[in-house]
Image 1: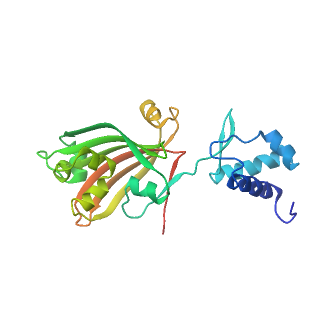
Image 2: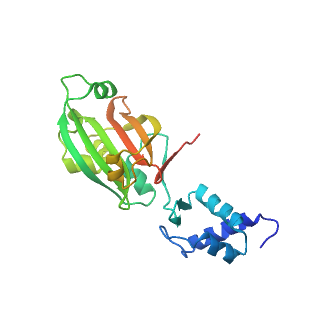
Image 3: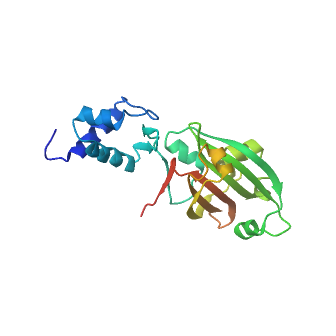
Length: 235
């Protein structure tokens, strides 16, 4: 080993290289700390430091009582502009899909009226979906859309790619979005939807999306599995 580089960093690099070469694939369980310490001829403390560094980088995932696994790379969303879930997945070579939990037209709540600038006489389409990337559940989403904007479209056109439908068939230009993010713990229902444990970490996003004209067209409340998704800011 190169004495000019800390040993734990050298081990970090070696394990990362093995993962990149395909020796261990996503979801694979690594050998125990004892086995790896023997392989690299280091103390378990040094080995553990290397493993933790890889975990901090999102390359490995440590599961208490189970072991250390090669982590699935988190889906990322750059928090600039307005981008659909479908576009985010496709941009990262993921296959997007969704499962609709509910889909109905109703009167808006006071919050929906405020966020979407609607009157009590107007209606909204409310849709609840689980969104997937490569068949892995990423988030549970509740979307509220002014019904007047989508009444002429089919359920498939709206649920598969709302933004694409609004732009290509409605002639609208998607503009900016206002987003609020907070942390929470998964409820029993959300844990079931996202295949998590109750109390696991959740990222909650509230977003109002606008056309370039300034008209709000979507109010979304989304709960993301904290171990599968991350936001990043670009300045």
